[in-house]
Image 1 (cartoon, rainbow, N blue to C red):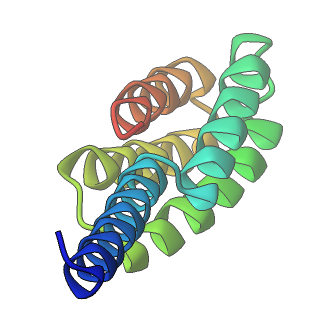
Image 2 (tube, helix red, strand yellow; image 1 turned 180 degrees about the horizontal axis):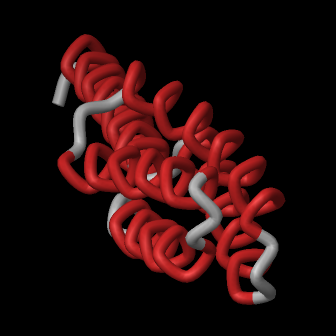
Length: 118
């Protein structure tokens, strides 16, 4: 192989390696979204308080989780995220009505759906 051919092969190998690494990095990032993680954490807090009958605190966490879930919707399209938003909205609505048990089930549904995004 000539010197020119060898250099060409090395350059092609380096470019291929860079493209492969950046593709893998993109795939890894696709499964991780800070807003989704925050939404899940707040939904879990909402569930914990809902199980204790604290509808007012449930609402606060569900609202905060909803903000994060809606922010995540700006970054990605995902039917599980859409269902998570719906569940958090329902949790807020029922929590405001004082129905901690129904609001808790809605928040649990939101967690289940948003956990599928990862």
